[in-house]
Image 1 (cartoon, one colour):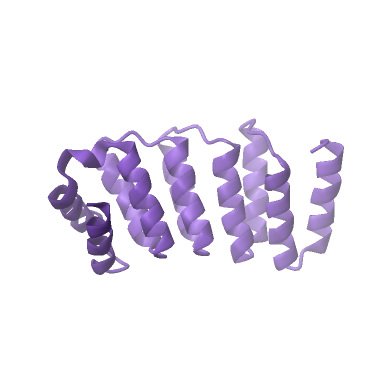
Image 2 (cartoon, rainbow, N blue to C red):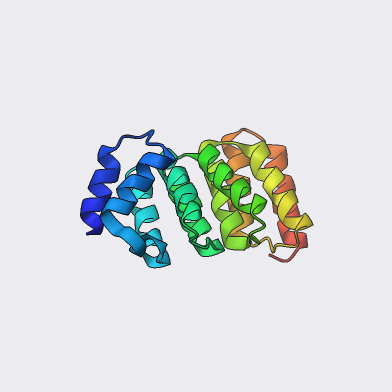
Length: 172
Protein backbone atom coordinates (compact mmCIF):
# COMPACT_ATOMS: atom_id res chain seq x y z
CA UNK A 1 0.00 0.00 0.00
CA UNK A 2 2.75 2.50 0.93
CA UNK A 3 4.72 1.64 -2.21
CA UNK A 4 1.73 2.49 -4.39
CA UNK A 5 1.11 5.68 -2.42
CA UNK A 6 4.77 6.67 -2.71
CA UNK A 7 4.65 6.17 -6.47
CA UNK A 8 1.50 8.27 -6.76
CA UNK A 9 3.03 11.05 -4.66
CA UNK A 10 6.17 10.95 -6.81
CA UNK A 11 4.07 11.03 -9.99
CA UNK A 12 2.25 14.10 -8.64
CA UNK A 13 5.36 16.14 -9.34
CA UNK A 14 7.88 18.01 -7.24
CA UNK A 15 5.57 20.97 -6.64
CA UNK A 16 2.39 19.11 -5.66
CA UNK A 17 0.23 21.36 -3.48
CA UNK A 18 -1.19 20.50 -0.08
CA UNK A 19 -4.75 19.93 -1.35
CA UNK A 20 -3.53 17.61 -4.14
CA UNK A 21 -1.43 15.61 -1.66
CA UNK A 22 -4.47 15.48 0.65
CA UNK A 23 -6.66 13.97 -2.08
CA UNK A 24 -4.01 11.33 -2.76
CA UNK A 25 -3.75 10.50 0.94
CA UNK A 26 -7.52 10.26 1.35
CA UNK A 27 -7.87 8.03 -1.70
CA UNK A 28 -4.99 5.73 -0.76
CA UNK A 29 -5.10 5.63 3.04
CA UNK A 30 -8.34 7.01 4.41
CA UNK A 31 -8.08 7.25 8.19
CA UNK A 32 -4.74 5.39 8.33
CA UNK A 33 -3.01 8.67 7.47
CA UNK A 34 -3.48 9.76 11.09
CA UNK A 35 -1.16 6.95 12.22
CA UNK A 36 2.30 8.40 13.00
CA UNK A 37 4.01 5.23 11.70
CA UNK A 38 2.43 5.78 8.30
CA UNK A 39 3.44 9.45 8.44
CA UNK A 40 7.04 8.48 9.24
CA UNK A 41 7.17 6.08 6.30
CA UNK A 42 5.79 8.70 3.94
CA UNK A 43 8.23 11.35 5.14
CA UNK A 44 11.19 9.00 4.77
CA UNK A 45 10.05 7.96 1.28
CA UNK A 46 9.63 11.56 0.13
CA UNK A 47 12.97 12.45 1.67
CA UNK A 48 14.73 9.68 -0.22
CA UNK A 49 13.10 10.78 -3.47
CA UNK A 50 14.50 14.31 -3.07
CA UNK A 51 11.10 15.97 -2.89
CA UNK A 52 11.52 18.52 -0.13
CA UNK A 53 8.58 20.69 -1.20
CA UNK A 54 6.27 17.68 -1.22
CA UNK A 55 7.63 16.76 2.18
CA UNK A 56 6.81 20.21 3.57
CA UNK A 57 3.35 20.04 1.99
CA UNK A 58 2.82 16.54 3.39
CA UNK A 59 3.58 17.86 6.89
CA UNK A 60 1.00 20.62 6.39
CA UNK A 61 -1.49 18.07 5.10
CA UNK A 62 -0.92 15.78 8.09
CA UNK A 63 -1.45 18.69 10.45
CA UNK A 64 -4.72 19.53 8.69
CA UNK A 65 -5.79 15.95 9.39
CA UNK A 66 -5.04 16.45 13.08
CA UNK A 67 -2.01 14.21 13.20
CA UNK A 68 -0.10 15.44 16.19
CA UNK A 69 3.38 16.19 14.98
CA UNK A 70 6.16 15.63 17.45
CA UNK A 71 9.90 16.15 17.52
CA UNK A 72 10.43 12.64 16.16
CA UNK A 73 8.44 13.38 13.00
CA UNK A 74 10.04 16.81 12.73
CA UNK A 75 13.52 15.28 12.99
CA UNK A 76 12.74 12.76 10.25
CA UNK A 77 11.49 15.51 7.96
CA UNK A 78 14.41 17.86 8.65
CA UNK A 79 16.93 15.04 8.25
CA UNK A 80 15.39 14.10 4.90
CA UNK A 81 15.82 17.71 3.79
CA UNK A 82 19.42 17.69 5.02
CA UNK A 83 20.23 14.58 3.00
CA UNK A 84 18.89 16.32 -0.10
CA UNK A 85 20.74 19.61 0.50
CA UNK A 86 17.41 21.37 1.02
CA UNK A 87 18.52 23.56 3.92
CA UNK A 88 15.78 26.12 3.25
CA UNK A 89 13.05 23.48 3.49
CA UNK A 90 14.65 22.12 6.67
CA UNK A 91 14.49 25.57 8.25
CA UNK A 92 10.91 26.07 7.02
CA UNK A 93 9.91 22.88 8.83
CA UNK A 94 11.78 23.91 11.97
CA UNK A 95 10.17 27.37 12.00
CA UNK A 96 6.70 25.97 11.29
CA UNK A 97 6.88 23.50 14.12
CA UNK A 98 8.35 26.08 16.49
CA UNK A 99 5.44 28.34 15.56
CA UNK A 100 3.14 25.52 16.59
CA UNK A 101 4.88 25.60 19.97
CA UNK A 102 6.48 22.21 19.51
CA UNK A 103 9.49 22.01 21.78
CA UNK A 104 12.54 21.18 19.70
CA UNK A 105 15.31 19.01 21.05
CA UNK A 106 19.00 18.54 20.32
CA UNK A 107 18.35 15.96 17.60
CA UNK A 108 15.94 18.22 15.72
CA UNK A 109 18.26 21.21 15.91
CA UNK A 110 21.23 19.03 14.91
CA UNK A 111 19.38 17.99 11.77
CA UNK A 112 18.75 21.66 10.92
CA UNK A 113 22.34 22.70 11.66
CA UNK A 114 23.49 19.74 9.54
CA UNK A 115 21.28 20.91 6.67
CA UNK A 116 22.90 24.36 6.89
CA UNK A 117 26.33 22.73 6.94
CA UNK A 118 25.56 20.66 3.86
CA UNK A 119 24.48 23.83 2.07
CA UNK A 120 27.43 25.87 3.37
CA UNK A 121 25.17 28.35 5.17
CA UNK A 122 27.44 29.06 8.09
CA UNK A 123 25.70 32.20 9.38
CA UNK A 124 22.36 30.41 9.67
CA UNK A 125 24.03 27.46 11.40
CA UNK A 126 25.55 29.84 13.95
CA UNK A 127 22.18 31.52 14.50
CA UNK A 128 20.69 28.12 15.25
CA UNK A 129 23.38 27.52 17.89
CA UNK A 130 22.44 30.81 19.55
CA UNK A 131 18.76 29.80 19.43
CA UNK A 132 19.59 26.45 20.99
CA UNK A 133 21.48 28.09 23.83
CA UNK A 134 18.72 30.61 24.51
CA UNK A 135 16.10 27.83 24.45
CA UNK A 136 18.31 25.81 26.81
CA UNK A 137 18.65 22.99 24.32
CA UNK A 138 21.88 21.06 24.83
CA UNK A 139 24.61 21.54 22.25
CA UNK A 140 26.51 18.29 21.75
CA UNK A 141 29.42 17.06 19.66
CA UNK A 142 27.18 16.62 16.62
CA UNK A 143 25.92 20.19 16.95
CA UNK A 144 29.41 21.65 17.10
CA UNK A 145 30.78 19.41 14.34
CA UNK A 146 27.97 20.41 11.98
CA UNK A 147 28.47 24.11 12.75
CA UNK A 148 32.25 23.82 12.28
CA UNK A 149 31.62 22.07 8.96
CA UNK A 150 29.29 24.89 7.87
CA UNK A 151 31.96 27.46 8.75
CA UNK A 152 34.61 25.46 6.92
CA UNK A 153 32.49 25.26 3.76
CA UNK A 154 31.89 29.00 4.00
CA UNK A 155 35.57 29.75 4.45
CA UNK A 156 34.94 31.13 7.93
CA UNK A 157 38.00 29.68 9.65
CA UNK A 158 37.95 32.18 12.51
CA UNK A 159 34.38 31.15 13.35
CA UNK A 160 35.29 27.47 13.11
CA UNK A 161 38.18 27.98 15.52
CA UNK A 162 35.97 29.96 17.89
CA UNK A 163 33.51 27.05 17.93
CA UNK A 164 36.28 24.56 18.66
CA UNK A 165 37.46 26.68 21.60
CA UNK A 166 33.86 27.05 22.84
CA UNK A 167 33.37 23.30 22.50
CA UNK A 168 36.47 22.57 24.55
CA UNK A 169 35.54 25.04 27.27
CA UNK A 170 32.04 23.51 27.45
CA UNK A 171 33.66 20.07 27.85
CA UNK A 172 31.77 18.68 24.89
